[in-house]
Image 1: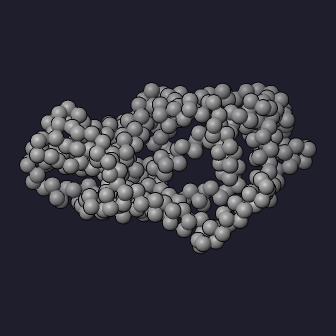
Image 2: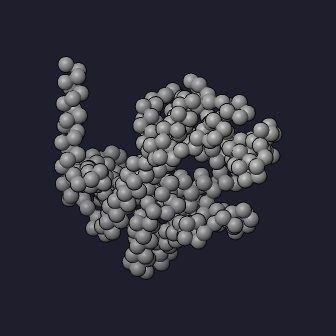
Image 3: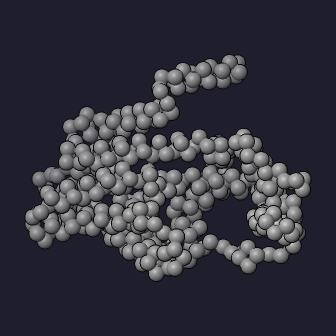
Length: 361
């Protein structure tokens, strides 16, 4: 009975996959359809749609297309398939909530590199995340406000009246200025990042304008033009609002289009770090692989086996003439062994730690 059920589910899944030209087409169709359905419900059959935001909708769809293109191309690689598949299987580990909080909430892994870098990442990361949590529900009509004659706003979420707030109250003030607060956070974080990149000698040597600086300039431009809109509305009585709103909208659209293909792509990919962490922790608890040369435990046995399987699948062979595989050496011994191939001396046999071998960050 169970076997027939599994067979039937696999058959249905294959028939669904055949309805699409590719995984990309399937992902795009399902995602866009879901967004449209949610907007249809939330806006009460499209009766509360702000057409001034249509540019953001187009930019979001292009971003989704770019994201799926990058993700599917990356996810089809043999190493990625392994840790995603096993990461999903390990998603309900007891340590997952803590790992998620450390990697996606508090950025504990960056704290180990210094409080300055942690602060800049916290400001940029949460500034961008909170901006998205405010902007996208407004763009797709999942949340909107209706004004009543008695001086109250009604907050509507997914077609349901959630709460009423006084138009001049402190809660409404935070609603109005949520994006201003996040813009200030992003500006501070970006300025800290730019200062570090200009002053830190190692960063200056490694950075490139398109990859390292342009994402920061895009975030800075979006935040500044967003604050400029508020300034024009409050202090200039709306003068220049239309032009600045177009500039701001175009800057957001360009950033959304660029996001999946540049350095900012690590933002939507970041949640998968929880999978990788669970994979390393779970299999490290089971058994560790010792380095063939120095006997130091450097990786889990499962990960070592997976690495060799992936290399074999890609017809990459690192079997050395000494009778071991290069993947069976820890990183320091691997570097020393490569040196021995050039020098002709068995440098990898010298058991001596490198100066920065145990460095963190």
